[in-house]
Structure formats: C-alpha cells, structure tokens
Length: 165
Ligand SMILES: CCCCCCCCCC(=O)SCCNC(=O)CCNC(=O)[C@H](O)C(C)(C)COP(=O)(O)OP(=O)(O)OC[C@H]1O[C@@H](n2cnc3c(N)ncnc32)[C@H](O)[C@@H]1OP(=O)(O)O
Image (cartoon, rainbow, N blue to C red):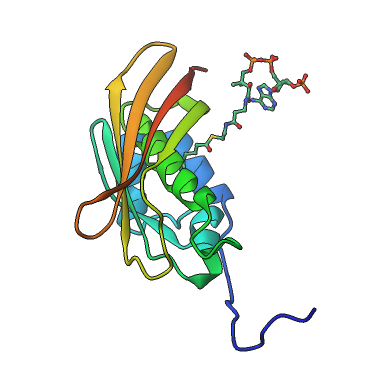
C-alpha cells in the first residue's frame, strides 16, 4: 500500500566521522558542549528521530524532542522506543560528561518505566540524565522524561561500561 503523499519527511544528516574524531580529542564535557555550540553536527540518530542536546553539565545532560505523528505506533500513541532513545541518550551523555579525554563508554543496560503515554500532541519532551555513581569501570545513571509541565512520562536506570584505552 502506497504511503499518504501528504505525510512525508525529508531527512538529511552529516558525516559522523569528524565528530567521532573530535570526541576522541576532547574530554566528554567539552565535546558535548562543543556539539551544543554547533562546532560539530549532531549524530545521524538525532536527525532521524528529531531530538537534540540542550545542556551538558558535570554528571548531567538534557535532551529535547518534539514528537510528531511520524513517531506513532499502531496503538495511537508515540512508540515507546522514542522514550527509550531519549533516556538512553540522556543517561549516556550524563556519563560522558564525567569522562576524561580518550576514555569512552557504552551502555550495557537500560531499564525504562513508562509512567504515562506520550502522544504526538504532547509537545516538547525533555529527557534529563544524571550520574548516580561514577566508577573506574561502571557508571550508574538515571533519567526522567518529562512533558513541558514537568510531569514525569517515563523513568530509566542504566549502567554504562567505561572503556579505557
Ligand atoms: C548526542 C546525541 C546522542 C548521544 C547518544 C549517546 C548514548 C548512546 C548510548 C548507546 O546507545 S551505546 C549502544 C548500546 N550498547 C551497545 O551496543 C553495547 C553492546 N555490547 C558490547 O559491545 C559488549 O557486550 C561489551 C563491549 C559491553 C562487553 O564486551 P566484552 O569484551 O566484555 O565481551 P565479549 O568479549 O564477549 O564481547 C561480546 C561481543 O562483542 C564484540 N565486541 C566487543 N567489543 C567490541 C568492539 N569495540 N567493537 C566491535 N565488537 C566488539 C565481541 O567481539 C563479541 O562478539 P562475538 O559475540 O560475535 O564474538
């Protein structure tokens, strides 16, 4: 079945290699702040799902997203994967802010609780990530997804493996 021609998005994205190289030259906080300042483009996933990093502070990071109908699942609400993506990004970047130059990370788990539905009409979402405990090998972090009124829509906990050279 052909898609509705009145419902379409055009997505462009930037070469992710330059920011990847920069991420290896800067400490985590400096890299994320440079991305917010526009020195480096956001990663392709940001363009695809339409979310962006708005702040990075030691142990904290915040993303925003304006959900649309193109995020909907077949049940009349935004797919839970969007909340997962926003929370994964927020807790990941919160962890990244604490890492020195040359130290990487990867998330090794993400547990999400969906407290309230997200609708395409909900308005701008805000995902806040926070480091609960740093460490030499594992960083524990938590996040909350809120609507514009500050109501919690979803929460998450995550563990992030520190990757030292
Ligand atoms: C600004 C906007 C957005 C910002 C978003 C930022 C947040 C993003 C957060 C994420 O989404 S991170 C992505 C989700 N997490 C992952 O993909 C982690 C996947 N898991 C792994 O890579 C490994 O399990 C892990 C490195 C955590 C542990 O590896 P171990 O070394 O302890 O176990 P093992 O040696 O058994 O490796 C498991 C498999 O991973 C492979 N592997 C490990 N390290 C690798 C590596 N560096 N590159 C490629 N493959 C690797 C390894 O070869 C092996 O493959 P096989 O099973 O086929 O043999």
